[in-house]
Length: 184
Image (cartoon, rainbow, N blue to C red; front, side, top):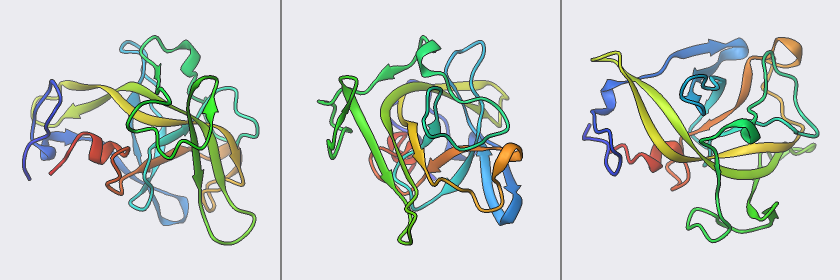
């Protein structure tokens, strides 16, 4: 594979190290780290090649799904920046959330329909370089902050033992982390 473009750090895709784990019910998750450099938030996210965006459940959600751990507190992260409603990645602009780009994701075709609503933000994401073991930072990657999470279920990964805090969207949409870092 070729190199990652348009970021300060350039290294081969095979150099990125992120754990791949199997959750209950044959679901695969990875652990991503983002936010504060000294105390990053490191949730487990469901790998989904059909989803356009990476999102996590954020502090202040209502309703929320149960998770074994904490929600991302975007209000306390000094590196979190809201995505403007005028940003090219804010599409379709269905609504604004406190003056910033709103997020709406709908899943499923059978009622009750799972959905996530909230806001879009930019944050620093950290990946380990497998060659050097150094932590590489990608600044300002777009992701979703789920604040109204209705009927969200991760198969048998539900209740207080659920480790999945959101979805790692890998479908190639310009808003997915996969596309945004331009892995070729």
